[in-house]
Length: 148
Length: 148
DNA sequence: CATATTAGTTAGTTTTGCTAACTAATGATA
DNA sequence: TATCATTAGTTAGCAAAACTAACTAATATG
Image (cartoon, rainbow over all chains, first blue to last red; front, top):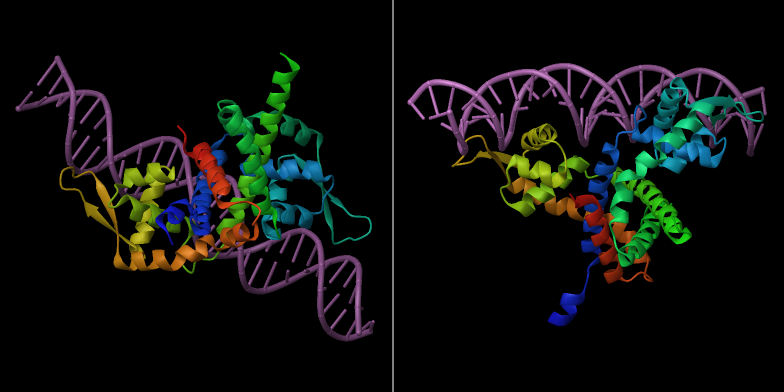
């Protein structure tokens, strides 16, 4: 391999490694954002619950990529906090459906800005080119994380 | 506010929101990768310790963006596992320097592939995304997490 | 009808983060 | 130089968020 080719070559391992590190650190940052009584996992689950409209517990677990027991406990805490309600399914009595309460909807609205504050600030500070790139970055990350 | 400026703000919020969600999920995915006895935080700390060469505990905490007490405990566990050693600093006796042991170096080599397997596979499958473009996007992600 | 599968829960553990409060060492200054 | 402030790291205690293993209850299948 010529040195020119070598210099230009970006190895997958290299990109993967940096990507992993960057995701880990940014995730730490984002989790530190205080949401006034609502934990990061709760906030995330609340949002996906609202978007899916009466999802089952299993659907929520799959969507959030966590195991069912973890979702059970998460929902238990959220129900206790009055953010969501468990409802029985008519057809299949094994199934637990989750609905966002009025209070949950209010909280959802309240925290939306807070959750995204850190990233918003940084995006706003960027020029047009970087924002464009950020949009492509999101698409890439979504594909990498959502696949199977 | 002009409608153009308004459109921008909406778009930033949208990108921010999707980015946050994508990072959270991808992070969960990456943490699930089994590393045979070494936890994700340990793996990450081991790598940065090797790269910085005899960093102080505080330097490690800053690099990993966690608080000093968390790093103290992490290093304690890693020392117990024989991956690193604490050494005193000659000049300043408050300072604890951390060195990777022979075993730590071996483990580092062993897990490098495993850590990045998930992302590697997916990046390789995306042949329409060229490596340099991906690399630039990762740089942007690094900026989003490391700034300030 | 018996058995297998599926949905969710319970229980217990681990990892990883935090803050508050502490010790020990160093630096600055009156 | 004695005192006070700052810095580095630790200890203790807490909480969130994830896991697996083992369970119950309901449904589907052969």
